[in-house]
Amino acid sequence: MSEVNKRFSDKKFLLMAGGTGGHVFPALAVAKALQEQGATVEWLGTQRGIESRLVPSANIPLHCIKVEGIRGKGKLALLKAPLQIIRAIAQARVVVKKVKPDAVLGFGGFATGPGGVAARLGGVPLIIHEQNAVAGTTNRLLARISNRVLEAFPCSLPGARQVGNPVRREIVELPEPEARIGSEASLRLLVLGGSLGAVAINELVPKAIALLEPALRPTVVHQAGERHLQIADEAYQKAGVKAEVVPFIANMAEAYSSADLIICRSGALTVSEIAAAGIGAVMVPYPYAIDDHQTRNGEWLQKAGGAIVMQQSAMDEKKLSELLQSLLSDRKKLLIMANAARQVAKIDATEQVISACGEELALAR
Image 1 (cartoon, rainbow, N blue to C red):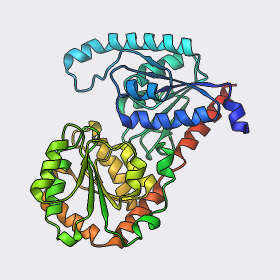
Image 2: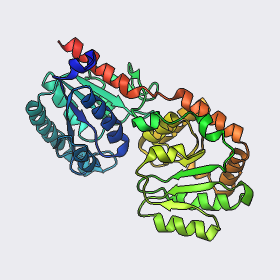
Image 3: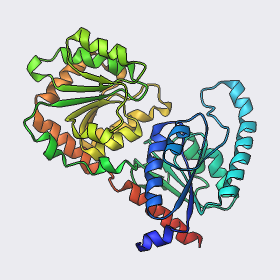
Image 4: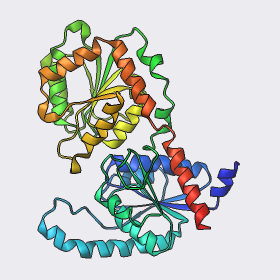
């Protein structure tokens, strides 16, 4: 066992993340790394978020509190908010006292706010990590009381250390872009509509590909989401375009390894995974995201040369087809984008978060 392992073998961490995969998956990557280095890990979340399914599946004890978001919920929710927050903090304090963690790590989501306050009230070191280029309300507030603030993209929070987004190890370990895109095999397009599907992407991509010359059409794998699977499949059939349409992709590393170009939303984890995998992308930000954070996420990779951001309001099948033609007809351009994406990836993000934990524990002695 290494010195790092010895240092963490008698330590316990309480992780807080919930609601969406963008919060939960980076936290799971860190949880796994902490466990591998000898630490005990437990989790604070809610019953309504994706963590209620994913965390127990990872064999991590899950403690749930009752709390939900209030932004965009109307005046009644705002009136109820103070009581709800006080109650959630009280519940979180019970969990913190029970778990007795050496440090608490917050990755966003509804439970993170009350949990972070409970940690500081209990004198427990608090470390927060912001996944998006625009910080969420919870992390903006917690940053003021946290012992250490980490961020995935630059300048999302004052005084934060940029470490990137922790992504799954199998994605980080994919071969370099030259080993994939440099071959003369037919080009492969991966379309990601999100786990719930993205209607605009599902409808427009088949029409855009249909406008391409048959010789230029790529092999298509399209993840459409369970609810939109049939609609997307029928759209390809109607357009006369061959495609493998699936509801969900369990092995994202394998999907990335087979892709030369991606069309997707620009959620924080998607952007970070694409950069780590080293693949060029056309990103269509979700237009109704709070604070328009998806546009900022995508612009980070676009500035580096690894992506092209196309706003949904300005996108139609003709414009998308013209863009696809310019990319698919130039394999060298795809390789340049892929290398640019890989170059700015923070492939050691998980290790940097772990290092920050060690530094904070050393200060707390």
